[in-house]
Image 1 (cartoon, rainbow, N blue to C red):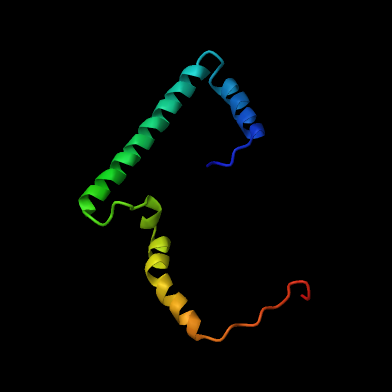
Image 2 (image 1 turned 180 degrees about the horizontal axis):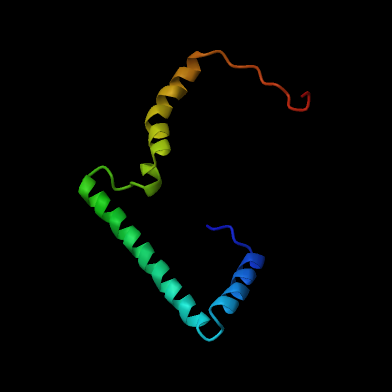
Length: 98
């Protein structure tokens, strides 16, 4: 999700030890984990409320579908795909020639 590797996690732990201190770091980590769980639950609740308020036909609604680009692709993409069928195929250029 965040593309954080082992080295980055280790660096964050070392920085946390220096800034917060080793005695308060476990409590801060537990608080951060609780906050993330709360945020995840709140987001899920909001998503469920949106689905309920939209009514039938939106049971399979995904949050990604609400992004403007995804919405345009979903509704206009079919029209573009159909118009592409009418056009002649474009010649492909071999990338090794360039």
